[in-house]
Length: 226
Image (tube, rainbow, N blue to C red; front, side, top):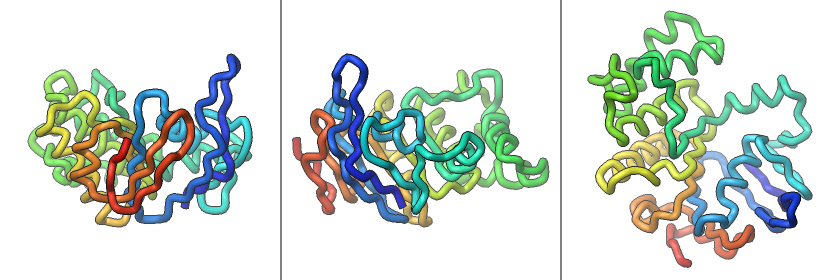
């Protein structure tokens, strides 16, 4: 589904973020990308979303070369990917319902679809009782679960979760990871970046370990070894 072919990224001052990465993520996989700060995890995410361009190499979504797409086609591609951010990026002046509805409106969904689907997805992430709450009225864990609901509402093929538990306590971290596992069990590909060993242990899926822009391990058995 996602294929990195000899991808490197070198910034203007000679800093190498990615160094000759070749990687395949198959449909339906749950892949954790781990490594210390600066290892290249977030740059890989930005490459998939075409927010950064490789200095060398190519990145494919199925048979599509992501970085050769026109602007309109790139927008269509991004609709097939849901993103969960560490810092939430919620709309502070909108309720939980309205934050998710806004994402559906941007994808061209009807009012009837919004009214039907939003309560369902909030129930999936155990936020049905927060439907009319604003983000400032919610805990960090609740806000992250709302981000997940927003990311999955348009039924993307891939969820990218970039350090989604970095600001959460252990209990909320566990809840968020369990929701991501549930989404994966329903068939959605999940790409998770983290430096949390406990998260990796609880997932028990494929782990790609990065260091200084290189992949130094690709472990099928869910081990975090640095």
